[in-house]
Image (cartoon, rainbow, N blue to C red; front, side):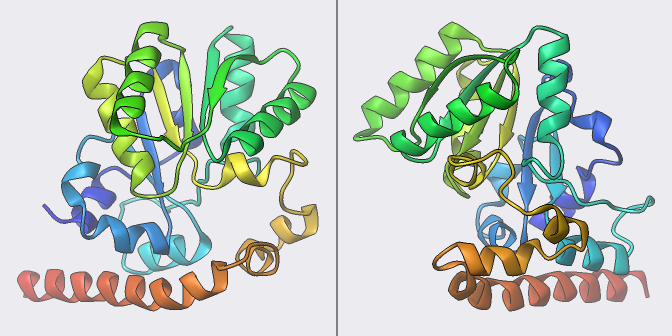
Length: 241
């Protein structure tokens, strides 16, 4: 099974599929991470939900009718699922652990979250950088022992997906969400995107403005994403004929 088939078999139909009480292993694919996932398909088989992240991904998947329902954009940030899962965590008294970004950024983001969600039980946080494999393994064992109810992992694709799968295989039983650059983006304020930018779906262009290297990376990976998707669709159409 290739990444296209894995993705389209795990697309969420509604936000309720992100409920942390369901204890799912959840990741998100944008055009950049899709091109990386193309070379790491085995890693993604272990996820319960793979959500299309980005207007371009959603547009193309709907165009090729990749699901029987209308696909929606879901992202692990404040414009999408994070308010939903944080509010459930507060209501259900679930504990949250933050893993990712550099030590300074994740510490600052934790303060931002506590200021905006004072009742949220953040039981710990640490950076997503490890000095050795032994330190990474020790972190996994520590989290398995603590068993927080949910973990957000922001280490970038494919590192965050590998960490999520390794945590599950090591015995962690709670909900896991990969969140890309979210822990870095929120180190100064809770909303990375201005309201009008989010409302008219200009998040991609805002990231070009705010994040060094984002445009260069996108120029390399977005055309590749489109090529891979349409090649897969053409092969599927030929099989049906």
